[in-house]
Every structure is written in structure tokens, then in C-alpha cells.
Image 1 (tube, helix red, strand yellow):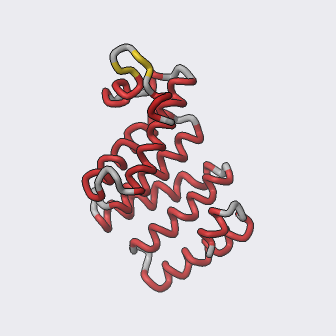
Image 2 (spheres, one colour):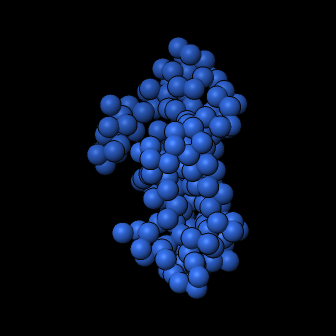
Length: 165
């Protein structure tokens, strides 16, 4: 219910429910369980959506670390956490951190779920919007991956506008 309220923008109703769910999962399942990691992720997303970035980041980092440890580095839930952390850094304008996270999430989803899966498509769209923003802000120096440059510029033409339509 807390995640639903969060998605609806009803943050004051969502936060106590998400905190309660996190505590219940910890009590029932122990500190190191994938459902605890998901609860941390949900709470981190809530704080990120509220602009409470200093509260969001440690929760999203902990969720990512736990998911990698518990599920393996190439699990779809890890890709979800990479995307969420990348989205937080995007909102903060920390672009040098965004690119590798979104590219890794995209790689995992493509490998495990295929290019047409909705989760893959969501991360791909997030990545393209990120590149578009980098270009609009003239911050191409924040990009490190050759793939990103190729997407922005192909044969001297700026192609992002066509990809985002």
C-alpha cells in the first residue's frame, strides 16, 4: 500500500507504511533478505521523489549492495536498483555517476529479459532522456562511454531528438 501511495504522490501516507513494512520484514526475515532490500529501495525512491536526496542515497546504495550480495550482480532486481540510483543522481545533476549505472542496468535487462521487455524499455528511455539532458546542458564532458557519444552524434548529425519521439 505504501508503494501505491508513493506512486500516487501521497507521500505523507506512504512514508509510515513503507517504514512499517521495512521494520516488519527485518523482524520476520532478518536484516539480510531480498525483501528487506526491496523495502529499502522503495523508501529510497519515496525520498528521492520528495527531493530528500540525502535520505534517499544511503537507502538506495544499501539496497543495491544487498541485492548484489543476495541475488548476484546480474539479477533483474539489481538492474532495478541500478536504475533507481541512476535516477537519483540524474535528479541531483551528478551526471558522471548516472551513465555507468544506467548502462549496467540496460545490459542486465537486455541479457536476461530481452530488448522488448517493458523493464528494458523503461531503462532505455531513461538513458535516452539522460543523454538528451546532457546534450541540452552542454555537459558532454560528463560522459565516459563511447556508446553514449555514438547515440548523441551519428555521422555528424544529432539524432537524440528522433530517438526520443
